[in-house]
Length: 316
Image (cartoon, rainbow, N blue to C red; front, side):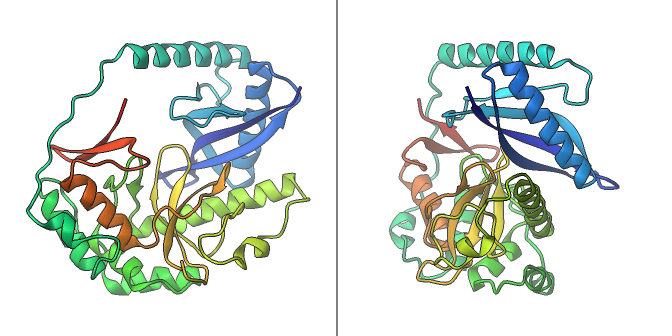
């Protein structure tokens, strides 16, 4: 029996304290968890050795058909301090405990958010301008510290380094914040300095995957499709704007076509999603609508809460 898996690992670049996440995938001719963990660990160490990185902290492991938020094993001991049997035993115990806690937890109470009159009606999908919509968002979450971003000169330097022409809204986004803000559920905005780092991590992961799977189609096949089309590979036209703690990112898809500038989700394990928002302005408008109408995002699964900061609670 062949078991397909994907492991998301945290690593540190030599001479750099900043951590990054990457997802690797593979298959094992066994259904025994210690065997799967062993294969995944070997793949993780091979990747780290190739790119001069040190595995740091925990990892998460998902198997065939496990796509829900809690469907994963927390992996500890990849540094060799534990045997694969010990890692598997701890992972099963932690997962069971986490699932029992979720079943026993009462539904989270809904907290109200401030609703300035008329904001929702003024900013729909056809917002007059990204800057105006962003300012409306800042007004709604005034108790959240959204620190101003990078100067235009720095933004244009990073844009040039990507080799891709950005939209005006994308440039403006990085001038309006400095990262660390959970604009949408589970995803924190990355600052300008993180853009090239995230791209390079995905390019490194792609290079490693290609070496392991020589029959993969060339990147050009995905790059030539119009923006918003499915993509199995991370493309130069993808500009990261936010990342979660599983190795997935939100990117602005700068491929050509009617949806150029749309926002999609990408992960090494799952590839690119369908278009989530047709533009950055539409994304911000959806957040504003959720805030001003007590609405929710991601198929109604997450509702915003404004307190010491903007957070998102999963509906039960």
